Image (cartoon, rainbow, N blue to C red; front, side, top):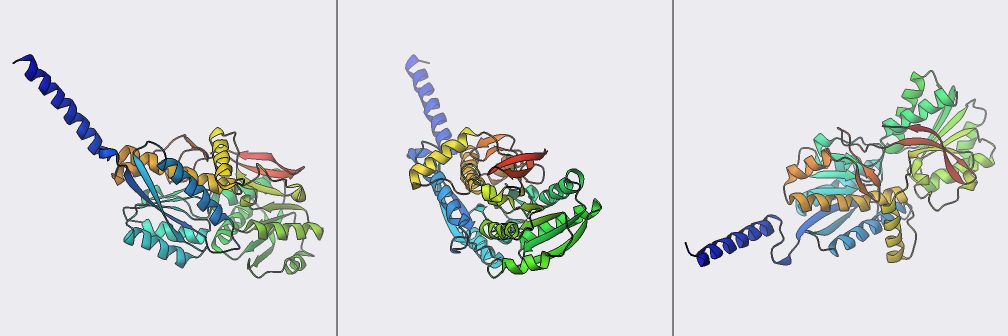
Length: 378
């Protein structure tokens, strides 16, 4: 065989191999693989600022990824969940059936996330929830959660009060919504198992409540600690400050979402109150995200945990799609086995149930800052 024929064969093999590589990675002709991601958030409720803030973070991630020389182009398709189960269910069904998305992310209220989880069960679709601690992950059912679930939070509250704070009686004040109801039931179960007693059990409706009525119900009750739960930080803060003004300070626990932007806010008005939330670790990627967010929108990140979670989720799915294309099984397996993946949310690993593995701590607010008093490691 002549040298010329050998050279032609070698060149043909190289060209064929290159073509196969480009086709297998959906990158022929410079085109990127389209990754459609459905996003469900409370977007039209002016009472909840988290939804629009999370949308801004998601849009930033999409813009960054699409501006890179990668294999994937992201398209985000939004639906308003309205913190309502029926609305979120319709949105999830529309995204999966009409838009044919394989990935649905976001959610803030537990009612939204529970509907999202039900929508993908048994189907070739995955939900990664950015918030909403009431729904436990279930990787087998295509559902993953980035938030501490209520069972863990309820346990940590009960464990701290009964064993470290030596509190024997507690009052619970909570909004009548799924997230709060689930957390409170978990807390009461664990606290009772430790020998604790519930001295007052008071619920309210977040859009039509009077803090004075809650205070009147608490007066005369004998309790050593109070657990106050609301999905809406502004509501929890209002009640907490009125409790303080009324002299009902004791040991009061507030929801962790109130402190998701603790990097910037001074909480001096809440000195002496407690909370449970994920341990904050130094994170250069979060700092980079926060800088990019401010440059893009002219304002600081306002809900650090929720915004970092949804921003990071889009990068996670883009990375998975870049590696495995349209192979749903491989992408799901990648998520199930994810360990110590780094992004703006910090280090991400999932347990066998699809819940985020993370250290959590009980904090007390002292001189306007969060100070750890008890750490719970996974």
